Length: 384
Ligand code: SIN
Ligand code: CO
Image 1 (cartoon, rainbow, N blue to C red):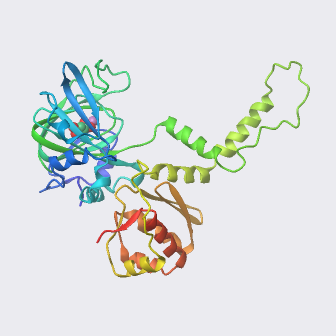
Image 2: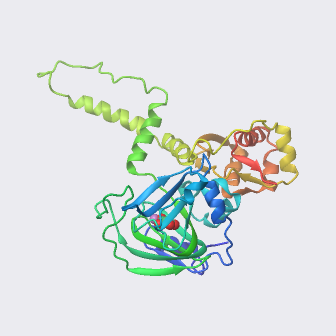
Image 3: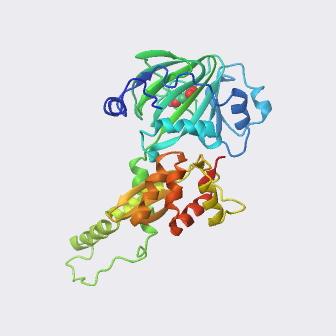
């Protein structure tokens, strides 16, 4: 099931991941696109689907962007210039696309962003640019010519007059034409430009990681919602100062003690990060069932051996914390103890859950109730 061809996962992680591009010919041999261009266009017309069209020359303006949802007629009225349709979160909407993700489980679940699809007629592209994501660019239909350059950052010169971050001085070092099944891995910040040669569909399997700003703001926000955060700084030992304008060293020591106590708490950090990193991308992705299942329904379903899968947009992760395991599903946490801890790695391992193991674990009534809750909140479903 590996997508790395002859390369071992260990070698890929050591020599390429976050370091340099890698071309893998026939990463998925005999790949047949799980979606057609028409189906992609149909999705781009739906309310909840994030879709964009990039037009290289929109009546004289370079690299313009239009946001969906689109009317069907929009596609007929596009200017006579190369364009690209981008549909974000394709794995959330198409189970056959979500299944592809099982081939990428050598990267932790929490790093996954989504699978974006791009469709372009001949010559279409999104221009030369760089991303802050790790991405596997999988060619699923037709051919695309990829040019790859050096590393960029926020100072790299950009074209003006466009809302997109188009590089004005793109210098390719390497070039490949990808055929269906071929795949190109790019680390963050590598300049690239992929141009369709005839009608072409490419999937971007994207992996994100939070910025330092996101880490600090989200974690401190989380800490502010914990018990005791309403307390004020106290100064019961206040002494007369020679100058009331001076901020005493003691105040800074007290501030530091609060920060240490609140922000350097490893358990809180773990619980925050698990919840933060499993938050679904959009609130309308994980939707509670109109008619909830009972514990008994779930027991019968699992005993019947029916395939049980993650909701395509759900995120599962866990962390062992001393004598308990924190299971994180879609931004919520569940603390498991004793033998119940086994549930966490079982649920998180892959998209289709091992029902034989699950059947054994739900003999514990508390776990049966937890699994029922995950069904009823829309994180797991019966895929038969
Ligand atoms: C594309 O597939 O057209 C764009 C993907 C990318 O360059 O990140
Ligand atoms: Co890109």
